Image 1: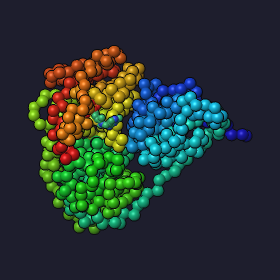
Image 2 (image 1 turned 180 degrees about the horizontal axis):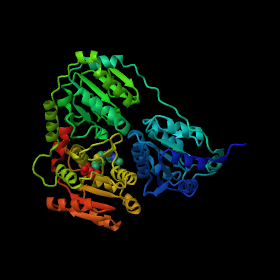
Image 3 (image 1 turned 90 degrees about the horizontal axis):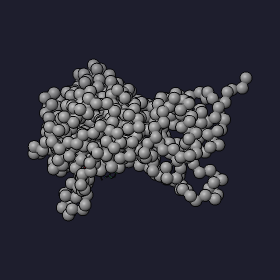
Length: 539
Ligand SMILES: Cc1ncc(C[n+]2csc(CCOP(=O)(O)OP(=O)(O)O)c2C)c(N)n1
């Protein structure tokens, strides 16, 4: 009997469905992408046509991140691929598992063609490099290797029409390629044993449901303060007695870390640390799943293993009698509570502006008790969003803090709302960031996604403008007349609200929280507190 065969394209679409893919995102060209859309449909995978390809790659990556499955995006060749560039950079630096399938130029075409031609492999290489992303050849082995390789690695494939049609074995067995951990923990355990004032810093690698329970058991057993990066918010709940605030690599966390005689990094990815040198002299124990080069620091000891494995081993070690007799952590609960309240106070904006970003985020928190996922853009508004939105589980808050790109929040919210329509999502964005992906309002409307977009509308690129002020430079034209986003959104079929006061804010947010489908709240934010807030956070 001969084994059944099918086209590579049919196998690929079926394999993606088996791996957990439910949505693919992109703007098709007229060639292989249409074949791909057709094959996806045959496999019950919904294709979402986006306004732009960069946003599509972000949606694919966030979708994959939340599903712990591959994310898929598609584009035409030439301009489609070029337009995907920022999405690929985000996938690489924000560690998103996005595979972009782009149309390709055939060898025969390249002999005579100039129209839309660019060197596609050369274009993607530097974008993917820092995320150890790869160009996948269109074959089963390469796809299997990507699916079974290190988590959250981006990839691009350029299949030609004949490669899509190529006949392959229909039921090629899946590869199971378990990652073998480095379990030599002797040095690390010694460090832990000697520590009296350890502090934990948790990063994006730990933001996974499968790691949460081991992490929380370890934190509980250790009794030390824990700081989470923006991308790891929720790994322990914000109201956990050990949570002492957010870690960015700035100054607000220094009060806590200066106390440390051992800093334990748990899945902290160097992309998450803002551009300042490492400020601490305490020994560092680095628990990670992947080593990226360059790193901010040279740890005293490093364990490269699935975090659930290393954390469970440490939690067990804390229970051992030999350890218990020498164990002398001196942290008091009241000290950690004080650190957290100092953090909260430091993140407050001075003055009594009723529409300060902190006041608005707290109002969102109060008006949305069902806690949709919060997707946050890059800009000054992110400081309050990340400080005051209460996260209880990994990925309750989604942000691009590796690439730190504007134009992230709305595409991320689309992916989050499609992933979990009942829960839905809120996109918190500056007006500058929203304008970078305004076309995706169409995608929100088209998918009737359960999304509330909240625009922190101050008519300027605040984060950059406060840096300009700090440098005592004259007005360089970084502001504009605030656009009427409520009117724009209603043009796309959204329910929308315009907010100029605290009373209007509560009323609009309450209405938005109780409504369904696409919603936008345009808040004329008071940006006067941003500068002091940034100083408190970053120094
Ligand atoms: C794609 C992209 N372009 C530029 C930047 C640099 N940048 C970071 S924040 C910022 C200003 C953001 O302005 P806005 O979206 O209005 O938010 P705000 O700072 O006012 O809260 C800029 C230009 C970036 N991070 N990403």
